[in-house]
Amino acid sequence: MMARVRKAMNEKDLNDKGFTLVELLVVIIIIGILAAIAIPVYLDQQKRAKDAAVKSDLGNAKIAIASYLASNPDDTAGDVDTAAATGEGFVQTSGVTVNFPATVAADGSWCLDATNPDGKQKDFSVSDTGGIVAGTC
Image 1 (tube, one colour):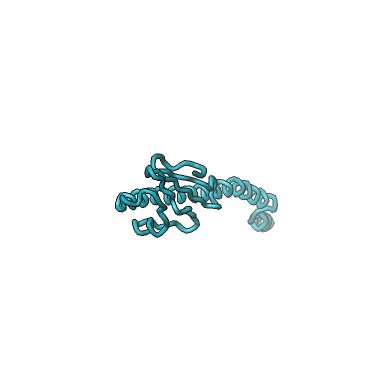
Image 2: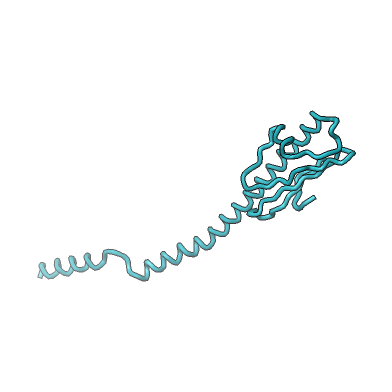
C-alpha cells in the first residue's frame, strides 16, 4: 500500500513540473500588449529628441550669428554663412540641416531656418528678436 502511494506521488510530481501551453500563450500575449504600448512611446521620444537637436542647433547658430555681427559691425547688410558661423564656434549636429546663409537686412534683423526630416515637428526658425519657433521664416 505504501509503495503504491509513493509511486502515485512520484508520478504526480513528474506531471506537475513545467508550464502548460495556455499559460505560455497568456504570457506571450501580455508581453505583446506591453510591447505594443511601449514601442510607439519610444519612437515618439526619439522624434522629440531630434526636434530638441534642431532647437539646440538654432540656439547655437543664433549666438554665433550675433557674435559674428558684433565682431564685424561693418557687415550689417549681407549674409552670414556657414563659414562665418563656424568661425564663431558653431558646430552643426549630424542629421540637422541649418539653412545658411542668414540674410541680414539693412536694419540688422535676420532669420534662420533649420530642419530635421526625422523629427516630429521637422521645421523650426529663429530670428534676431525672437526665440525658436516652429515653422519657417
